Amino acid sequence: MTTLLPTGWCPGSRSIAEMAKLYPHSTAVRVFFAAGEGLPASAWADPARVGRQRLVDLPENCTAIVSFKDQMADRAAFVQAWLKYRPDVDVDLITHHEPEQQEGGDPTRAQYRASWTRTREQVGDHPARAAGRLRLATCWTLQWIRRGGDWRLWWPEHEADAVDLLLFDWYPFMAGEPDPWKPRVYEDPASALKVPVDIAGQLRRDWGLAEVDHPRILRANGFTVDLDPEGALAASWYRAMHAAAKAAGCRVWAHFHRDMGAALGDLTKRPAEQAALRQLITQEANDVGRQRRLNWVKDGSPFRLMTPMADLRDTLRRHGYTVYDIGNRAHLEADPPEDHTPYSATGYPGKARYGVGYAGDIMPPKDGQRSKVDGLPLPSLQQLGAQLLADRNAGVPGIKWLKYMNWEPQKDNGGPCYKESWRPTYERTSSTDRGHIHLSGLTGYETATIAAGYDPVARIRGDDDDMMTPAQFLTLLKDPAVDMHLRGTAWRYVGGGIPKGMSTLGVLNELVATSRLLAEKVDIDPAELEQIRAAAREGAASAGDALVAAVLAKLPPGTLTRDDVEAAVRDAFAGGLAPDAG
Image 1: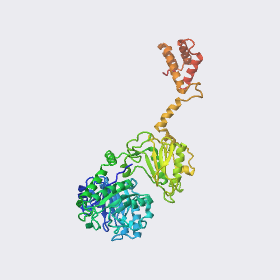
Image 2: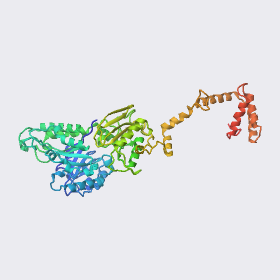
Image 3: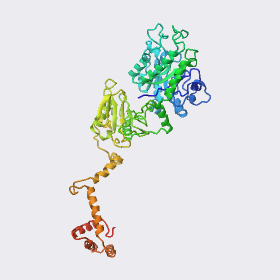
Image 4: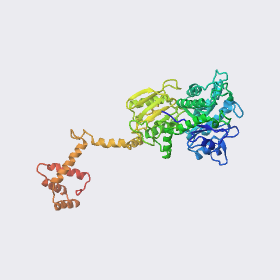
């Protein structure tokens, strides 16, 4: 699966509008709010604003990487204005960019921790975050870490659940060089990216590059050699670095467009490198996954979660679990699109319906978190996953719609991660999808209500004997598939009072044939029949006998006995039928 890597720039002292003209179709823009500037909601729409912080000028459908330094900044107002004025844009919001630098405006560790708590309180539960459109991010300088700085000092572990994304600023630093900040070669991308990849792996978070820049290796730039006078090597390095980052799971990439003259950060003076950046931006802008998402947006963004997944999601949310359904932009722009999207290409056993989502992610409960339903501690993902697996293999109706499940039987990423699949028979394989339980559903169950009463938490506690409530039973009866089977079952019935070798449908067919025979053979004079009906209406006691006699008189000999006809008439009268019924 390939995923779009939003690619763009930080404008330096230029305006966003000017940079957007230099690099059309950019999918990422880096924006700073320095100490004392707050995080102004007015930046999204105020026509009086100009320059690098006029966010209304952001390219369409891009990702805005926004950082701020002020602890008391109003995150909620900023997010509200974003969704009002530029809802097409996604936002990666950095709380205190590069706090480890400890320069003017940088917080103490206590202030940094308090600032992250404020971020979580103001926007941690925002729906845009749950939808994956608002990502809360840290941002550290890789040079500082690579020369020995401990990133853990600036990891907000007390608010770890509020951190979605790890961002890094990448500039040259190669330990072992005479001058580590001015190496004599362009570093191999795998080595250059090892630190962010390793940290992201430890913390089980997505990662990205908020700033990237590599000046040409020239004496004029402070290096010890004139290695790259035309910038061809730097341009090649940019391309290789971008490809390696994308392959390693990088989620955003922004070149730091400094204004420092020829051969340094300003790519308007570095044509080879500028051409490389434009190529990378165009490559991502034309990504097939991105175009698929944009077409879906043009259609009005239709989305409905398949009913059994929605029912299970709602049951788990009532207990207090966090459960996600539609994917974030990375999912929506992946190729091929999978079950978190409303246009999945991985439907099974049939083709997925457009506009329907087939997946959900169950996130781990917090330590000590209790159910909102019964007040007891919420089961861990390990307990929950084990119950889901056991129920699916046991054929429990409430979970038989499950196509596959990714989960970890052991807590804290300490053991294997499995993909349990039923396509169509059960199979277990390895997975790398850690940190949650992922569920994907089978096609054909889009509107099925079989999960309406299914509660795996209650089953773990032994409180669910699989008995349905009357309301759940009525809901089940309304399922079109169930209704179809019930209609057919009655007519397929055999045994009891049904003649041997026949079903209820067979008996009905025989009755129809007999009635047709009677209709053909019985030819009662209309005047005579009217006399019988008149007598019946007047309560004549002989109406039944007259009718029996009239029928017998017209039947071929041996067809029915008098007792047969009398019994039939008697049953009709007993059922409340008037003698003149048709």
